[in-house]
Image (tube, rainbow, N blue to C red; front, side, top):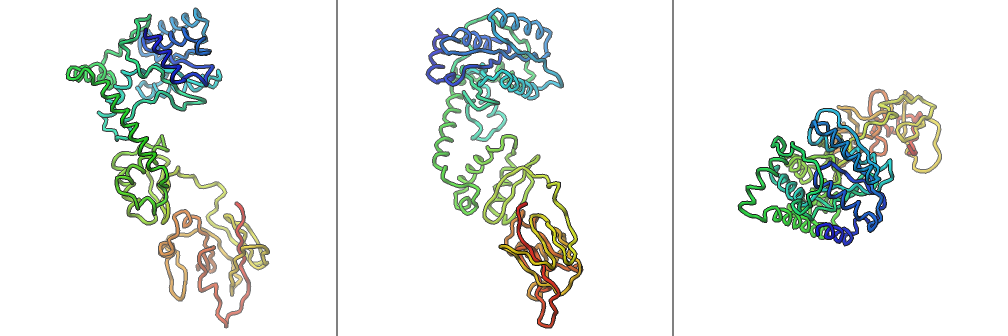
Length: 425
């Protein structure tokens, strides 16, 4: 019997060993009704307390009747059911996001540690075929996972190895829209796979096996490359181009909401291989930041409200600016104090660099941009650099350079010192 096979499989995989309160997603179709039937039948063997979650998408006249029928079933079985009505413009993605947001809320509300869904082997094959049609990369041609982190706990798909054709014909609702071929999944299910299975009756299983082999391949490659620190550029550049591609694909999986096209991926690879010091906007809030030694992809941080573009420092006064203490005249005590000698007591302007800035070094005026490039200063440090200006001339770049103007000649009279000390922001 299929029921006993399912129970044996669940116990072997220990799906519910760590879970006592589970939320079951029930649409009313045969697969989810079979899942609910199994969990209810074996609730004592599995030591489970079951809660039902149902989303009424309001797309068919029968939706309200089906919702009421599920509520009656829940009452007959003495199970708690949570329902919600979908609102807004309908699309497959919008509806899916709505469902799973609702499931997370209900899990948290009822302290459930697992969401259980009725995805089965047919869904597995359809998903893999759809990924092939869309031209997915090999890394993403993997199978649907039977368990993964979700919300406050886990998402479990305990029916993934079973075919829908093997499910008993329990009372359930037929969604007439499943026969319409408006959506890709319906066309795959109703048109494409049946034709291909005429050529190979085992075609669906072949798709599942292919995805399983892809999973194993990536597990092996992950093991072989686990000691490679991908963001270290010296290490990255030593790798073969094929290995670089694999490592970068793996690194990008950390950013689930960053959808990179093939062209963008190749662009990132080219930047990593050729650019020396670079910042590149990718998509949405993400950017690629590369200096001479390493790189990272990160969310673009808004400038802190406390950051100031400039501040005036008068003689015989002390102030804090962007993580430093500046004292024009009065000496600062302590460690790591930089001292600039000045032959003029005119006001000092403390600011961040501006386009066209120049500094006098060893008798030659050098653009700050060129100075940063030659010294291999990272983009972040360039952005954060503090310029000390006096009489509209740059006299120093804090912790980086001191202008000839701040090195008075023997004939000059030293009128004051500027003391600079790093402090905690």
